[in-house]
Length: 158
Image 1 (spheres, one colour):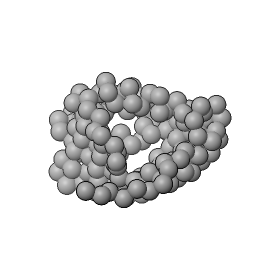
Image 2 (cartoon, helix red, strand yellow):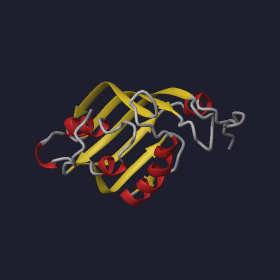
Image 3 (cartoon, one colour):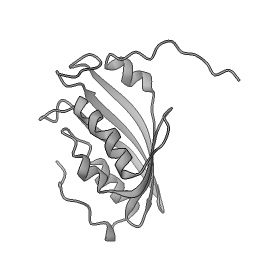
Image 4 (cartoon, one colour):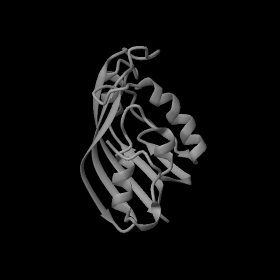
């Protein structure tokens, strides 16, 4: 379990800041703690989605998403495992597994359904805070594993 205190950003390198940040990815998700690692002008982008810019916008995105996976145990809900991490200066890359289980009362998807998502995460750290957070993953693994439908694949055509 991680320490639920906001980060002391003054004396740690980028890799340690990201590792500490990733340790907050447990159920129930403490959105305030997670946001304490991020700059006010954070840019968060997931594969295939428009960027989310700023802490307020990210809070508005994360809060309802976190409630879909709420659980009082670490075996259900949401958790993350870092498989590998590398850093060069202010840039950090992490290969991770994310484990999701929809809450039994989820209004969408298949309540209780689970999915494991392999994620490549990239971060920029400046002034002791994460300023950019980008994640690449196969959204079909996530959506289909949890009982959502994306519909048929439609290739891009100019």
